[in-house]
Length: 128
Image 1 (cartoon, rainbow, N blue to C red):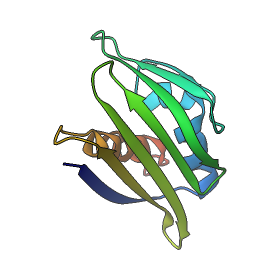
Image 2: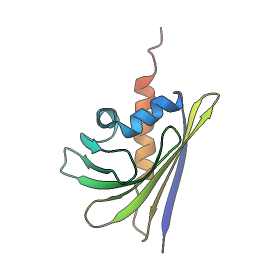
Image 3: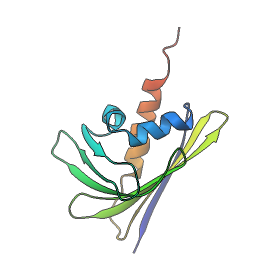
Image 4: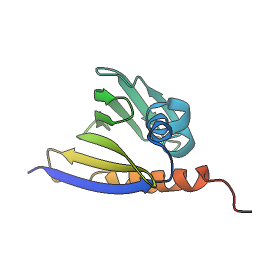
């Protein structure tokens, strides 16, 4: 049984900013994992580490700059595919995150969206 979780969010930022937040290790460390290594090109590898000891390893499948990023990632036991699609809209960027696992295991797509919502809020200029 395959499990797919799909989430969508409109971020008040241009696609280039969202792409950088998804692909640059320093930017990912601001909002997602505590320590990130990522080579965001097809065949590139990545490692995501959290302070609680969790670690996930990734292999990039698709990197279409500003449009789509897809990678397989694993915590050592379960492997899933995470696919990000960016679309420019009047409000900024519509980001669709789809995480697919070959089993009925829970996926992290909701966590990506939650973290991206926090990043979007932190990226907005302060109200005067």
